Length: 501
Ligand SMILES: [Zn+2]
Image 1 (cartoon, rainbow, N blue to C red):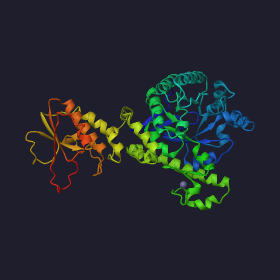
Image 2 (cartoon, rainbow, N blue to C red):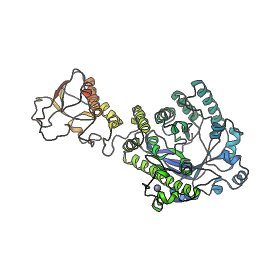
Image 3 (cartoon, rainbow, N blue to C red):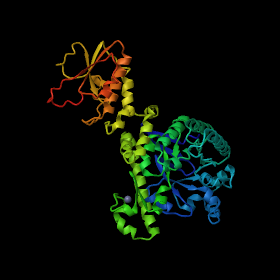
Image 4 (spheres, helix red, strand yellow):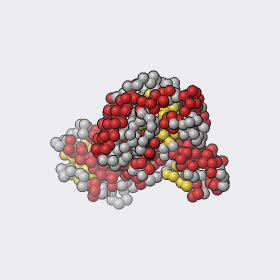
């Protein structure tokens, strides 16, 4: 693995980074979207992808060029950058998509990697074997070994400055994905596409996508650039970035447009169903759905492709901004409301708190509690871990009135803020305990706070812990250990609001 990728900033497992592409002489800011360019059908010319949409990198299929009667020779003579007229970096795929579709292709890894080098590709790909989801373990393992052998053969070739991808296969078997990632990294590949997730994405199996990516990431060094291969719908970018993916490619912008489909960050609409374009891009400013429906198929496709690109690049910029601001998970929570299966994916990701927490910054802007999932964010878990390390006296009262009018006597008085739970007054202005939390909290937030109480009590067995709550649900009180004294604070019915303290 060459030293070409650098992470600039993390938010959870999401990261802003820079991928240096030496052969192109450019540095790509990540997360980055690679529009897929079909050399034969350029819905939007690559020059415009760079100049009007800000594409720094694109992907095209070297196998299509290799087999093309009219483009193969021009590609070899002029080179890809001239042929496509694109000033940024160009990644090439190898034909493994065709292998998955048709069962066989007529080139070897050596031939196609050499060809990619000879046409001037900046990032080349061996012929990996895309194991279909739900293939059994034996098949997935056998195909992964075969992919790995091809990566090693490609890595042994002299391809100069061209970077090499090491596709991570393994179907839906996490342990094979992890092994694939480790072996691909060990063999010297530079960029790591998590492959064969398109069937999962097409079936909205986001929970499985999360498991596959998290497993692949486990097998990779922290600073390895990860490409979620085939993830081109803008509704998925925030979740994919939150898993720690750095590159996405979109054929969707053109494929959907050709089928009169309009992408949004919440899903896909059909042109026929739209009365309004809910978007501020130039294409949507110029057209109404009714006017566009009147136009010939080709023109409709071009206008929709432009919109689809605008909405996709805008979402990438939004994701980058969210990582920078430290609120990527809040963006994921919003996007997860677009489709129940995306929510499933987000919940699956939250089941990997170690993945999310390992690189999460200790301090960010204000924590916004926006959903039942907020109580499971890494910041809550980290606060619970911190509780285990805090100095506590013989007696501590958690919650209750914050003044000295209580009956705590000599006890220490701590605050209690769902979803975090107990906190000493000295921490009350520290991130994330300054969270903005709705007054009408759901039980999960109290349950998380109760887990904090339990953590405090369990790690300080000699401390008498008393919890004074203002009407926690039974499901939360059930989490509080028996040796914690629990009392309900008498608010008298018309007491002024004091939040949850
Ligand atoms: Zn638009």
